[in-house]
Image (cartoon, rainbow over all chains, first blue to last red; front, side, top):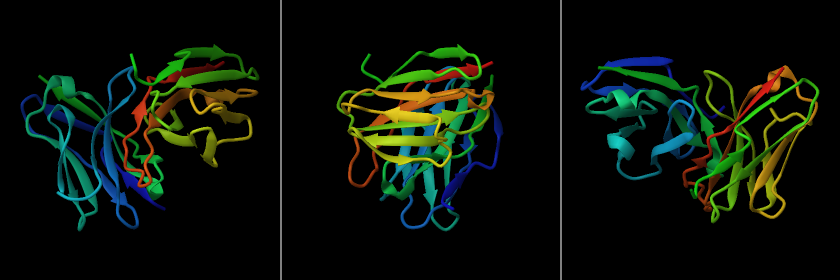
Length: 113
Length: 116
């Protein structure tokens, strides 16, 4: 089955340190991959997407993600975490390129001062 | 605010009652999606429309669930004979659908359903 997986339920990082939120995919063909963030009591917000081209994708709020075909991964990264980055992060792929997104189970990021 | 709006934001109902949620997408978006999210889980796809046509329904969607988008603008999601297992956040999203389907989805803040 085509899917994405987020192996960590929770990631804890100190403010100012780099952060990584992991995502692996199992998708046939060319994967269209996305990252979304969900703040408490808010809707999901788009961060970035990989469709084709450069493997390093830059997105909103200083986030970036690296597409790695050999490792079938699309990890989300930020060089210096902020307390305000604390939220739920979801990796997703575009199933069959039909517009429907299939989401991973989410990773809760906690950034402590 | 020109984002996706959902109404009501919270609904508490008794088991067996019917509930209806409304979603108003971003006006120029032709695709509209419904998802369900329970605590600690990622959003699960329920159904989506392109204009007024319902193009796909998840097998998760029992026949107690029905969605419409009669004029290709707003959409409603109705749950009949609610069960406690229906308690969840119901999310609506819209997108400007392209042939390649690479456009991002824009989500509303959700309608939280509690079935007592």
